[in-house]
Amino acid sequence: MQKRLVRKLDLENAISEIPLHPAPKAHLEQYTITPQVAAEMLYIATYVNDDIIDKTVVDLGCGTGRLVIGAALLGAKQTIGVDLDKVAIGLAQKNAENMGVEEKMFWITADLDAIHGTFDTIMQNPPFGVRTRRADRRFIEKSLELGDRIYSIHKGSKHNRGLIKRLRSGGTRCIPTQPSPFLERFIGKHGGRIRGVYAMMMEIPYMFDFHSKKKHRFVVDLYVIDGRHTSKS
Ligand SMILES: C[S@@+](CC[C@H](N)C(=O)[O-])C[C@H]1O[C@@H](n2cnc3c(N)ncnc32)[C@H](O)[C@@H]1O
Image 1 (spheres, rainbow, N blue to C red):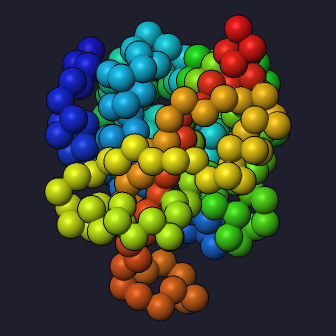
Image 2: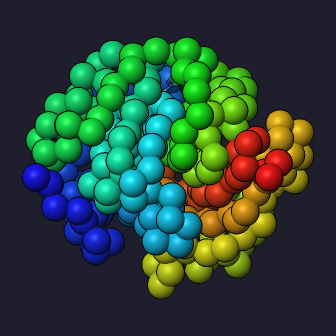
Image 3: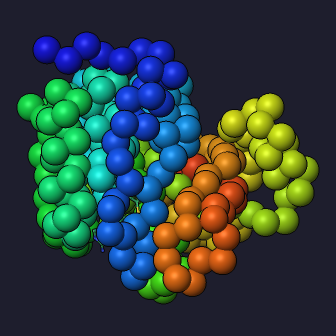
């Protein structure tokens, strides 16, 4: 039986063994989350908010499975990875087998709109809506419908220079910050309530013809949100 991971570094190392998508599609914004951001996100969910151990966890747009496999390694009761790309789902399934957690994992190849029900926790690193307009908003709406608690990654503010400098210096990896006024309104309008926002540094390698650098480093914000059902109670 798989031993439950406890140390953040062990989790990060395990996640770094899950490869990037080998043939990413630009219109689906198939950027893979870094092991550092995934581990921070899963750690906050597990040990700050108690949202992973013995919980049902859904990863919307799971890609090759870094977040949802991480949740399984930390002790989720049952996990579901959803992605409309069947190549990504096939790889995620293989990765779960390699990590020895396939028994508690379900995989669904479908658009997120096909998912119904209620779940304890939603993890997502959605497309930012750069290539397909409003793609990120669909993920927020759906996650608020499905989850009691949502962990969602979004593009961070370019304007908070002090925060960017602190993150770039590498001294700290995760800094509490303010929500964007737009997302705060959007989430509130769809019945959610923001519990916290954390800024982190993300890095993506050169992937597509329209990329101009070998690596792109930028700030992302992790939103921790009470879903529609939780924020009413
Ligand atoms: C930014 S990638 C994140 C992948 C993975 N969660 C990670 O963090 O490494 C977004 C993922 O969402 C998937 N996706 C995009 N639109 C989708 C939709 N409408 N329904 C389901 N999955 C979708 C893409 O195929 C892609 O794998």
